[in-house]
Length: 181
Image 1 (cartoon, rainbow, N blue to C red):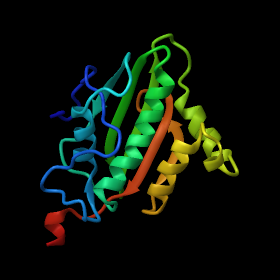
Image 2 (tube, rainbow, N blue to C red):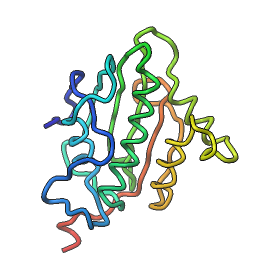
Image 3 (cartoon, helix red, strand yellow):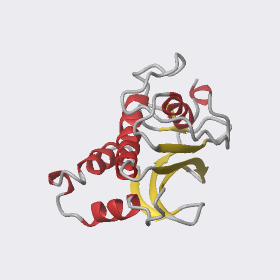
Image 4 (spheres, rainbow, N blue to C red):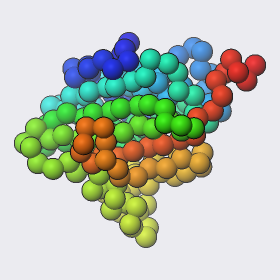
């Protein structure tokens, strides 16, 4: 299990689908973002030479999106980031947090060859494209954005806590399961 703020460079993530913990039935319309990311952190590596710095919150971040759909959207984003890093290797930084009424996940790629990060440029290009789903290089982002857009979420390029540009996925927070009962 990944602890809050723990650095787990040796771990990778699992692309969709992710096995869900027993307390998160697949039919739910809310998901704990922290639990979905922790399951990815416990999964196998996606690309050789790519390590991951996971920074997860200590408490659950409930978002209004089914766990399976959330895992697929995050899986597509992280798989693309790893693919972009794979030729040179490097570190993928993933930072999940609550900001006001939303949950945010920042993803920053840091290539080992000290080249500028590529993920933010790809996300920016996606946001400017007229038909991103028709471009093979942008299709994973189009699929990710389509899934989160349906839940009032957003995917965009933005500066990260580390100072570098990265991709940010943002979803509205939902009441926790205990509050719904």
